[in-house]
Image (cartoon, rainbow, N blue to C red; front, side, top):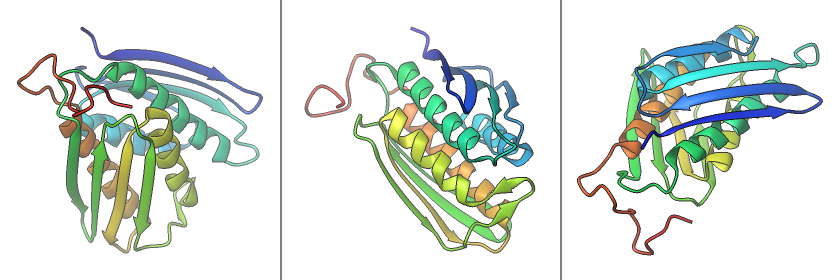
Length: 196
C-alpha cells in the first residue's frame, strides 16, 4: 500500500500544496518564495528519502511567518495521512547530525500524541532571507499536525545556517528511521494496539 498523500490548504494568507511519498525515489520540487526555507525543505526531503513537492504562495510582503507556519501545518497533515494506521513501522527514530561546528539531535515518536520540545544553544536570528525564529514555528506546526512527539535540539553551534541545517538533517534521519518497515508487517507498534 502506497504511503503517500496530497494536501491543499487555502486561507486569506497562504495557498499551500504538498505532495508527499514516504517511499519515493528521493525527488523534490520546492517553491515557497523563501530561498533558505526551500533549502531546508530540500535537505529534509533528501535525507529522509521522501518524494516531496511543496508549492506555497504567501503574503511575503508582510513577512515569512504565515508561509513558513502554514507549510509546516500542511506538511504535517500530509505526513499523518501518508503514515495511515502506522502498521509495520518502527515507530521510534533518533539521529545526531553535524554541520561543521554545529551538532544537532532529533528524536521522534510516531505516536499519535502531538508534542514538541525545542532546545537551541544558539539564538536563531537570520539565514539569508529566513527569519530564524520561524524555524521553531515550522517544526512545531509539523509535529502538531503530524501528531508525532518531536524533540529537536541544537547541542552547540555558531553559524546560523549550519545550526538550522544540522537540525533539519537530524530530523530527516530520525523520521527515516521511525518510518522504516519492521519485520512484522501488520503490527501496530503499541501495547494498546492503536496509535492515538
